[in-house]
Length: 150
Image (cartoon, rainbow, N blue to C red):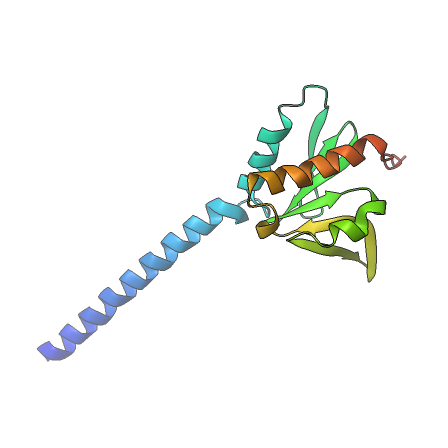
């Protein structure tokens, strides 16, 4: 009878260790990205970069299951999950498609020119991150804002 109790105790202890491991993993992952449906760390990184431009009117809106950074009243860049969602000059589409991390944006079965997702390997380095943000900011000056709903 003692052997059975010892085995049972060992099994319960093993379960507690496994549950503890999984809880730690869940807590770690939730602080990284899933607390708001988008990476709060990536959003903070964008905020830190944009703050250097005093001439920009920056507004944040939840949009596309993520966080949109509206610059001077126009959607500029979004955080979608762990990805960037970029709005850029459609004339640059062919050049930009070759960049690491680029992912075509498809909505309702159609490719959206001038929009893309960028996966984390594409903006891991500071210079790559700044490239994507600057690309969006440069187009923001030329882009038209969407019509306001009445």
